[in-house]
Length: 82
View 1 (cartoon, rainbow, N blue to C red):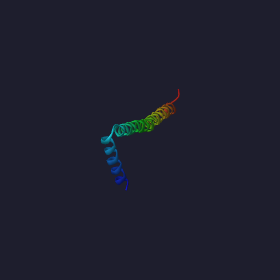
View 2: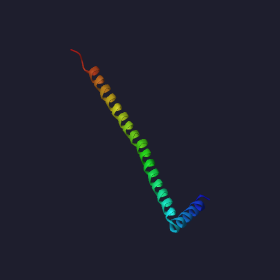
View 3: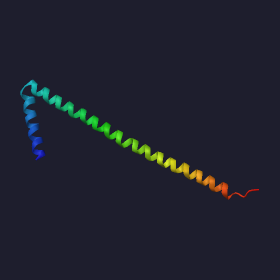
View 4: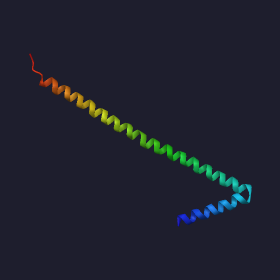
């Protein structure tokens, strides 16, 4: 049903664009609006996905630092005292 509505809208927009300059103006506005919304969606996806990768890297770095500290503590406890 949505496909049929899209086809009908495209046909109507094509007829308006070919008929007079107002139709061409409407078609241009619609195309520009679609491009603008696409850019906004891409930016939103970027802000959602990129920080998550950075946070995962920070968790890995924190786990590695904790491992190094535990290893150093284990080495200090295992050394004989004189």
